[in-house]
Image 1 (cartoon, rainbow, N blue to C red):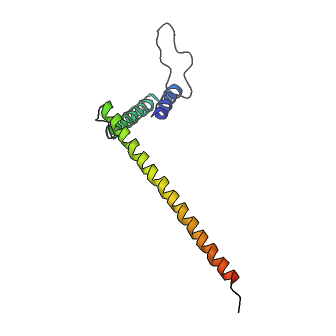
Image 2 (image 1 turned 120 degrees about the vertical axis):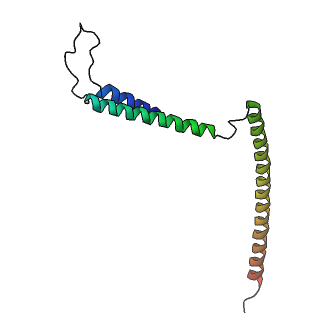
Image 3 (image 1 turned 30 degrees about the vertical axis):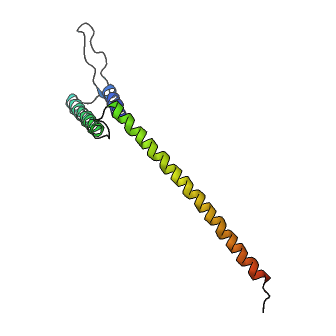
Length: 124
């Protein structure tokens, strides 16, 4: 949206024609880059329409944000609840990782024992 706005301002700055603001001070030199007044007005209408459309899209997105209809206290409570759920899930994850490491070590020990046993057996 900000980029659209700055691009629109740039267009207006670059493509607008010189306008006489005071009859005592005439326009001495017309702007060479200026668009034809009807083209300029059409483009301005399109820019305005695009900006308004984008603003409405942003408003619509804001309205569907989760918790936008809740009070600040309700949102804080929801975040605290989510933090607690995340903490519990993290503890469960860490416990599962420790268990996996323990099982991995047991498997490694079993494999070492099997290899050692096969090395000690005489080959026929």
